[in-house]
Amino acid sequence: MPKKPSAVPDKAFWVGGLDGGVFVLIAKNKNLEPDEYFAKIYYASGDIAYEGEMRLSPRGSTAIDHINPAIFQGWDGDTLYIEGNKLLKVQN
Image (cartoon, rainbow, N blue to C red; front, side, top):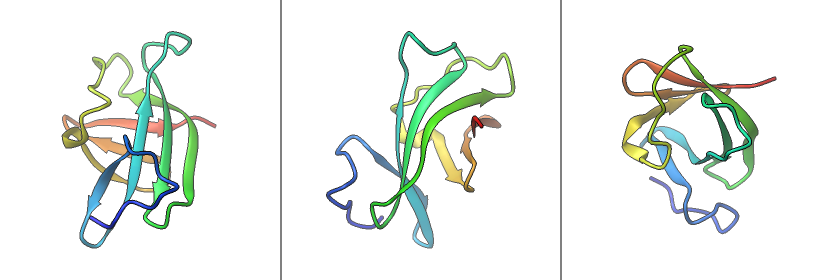
């Protein structure tokens, strides 16, 4: 894991491996639907890769423990992969 840049919040966690990844900060609030989350995803440089709402897939999935870094497996530019074949997908 690279050193966390000062632009990345302390609560953000690394999702990835030695060959690359992103820092992720996921939030949930009462204004969002049960399957919606708010994400800030940062490149290793500290620049923002994505900021906005994401929807849990497949539909009807049970809520995720969004503050547990261990459940996140990777990011491909529009999808966060989560254990148990779940996904958080960017909302356009």
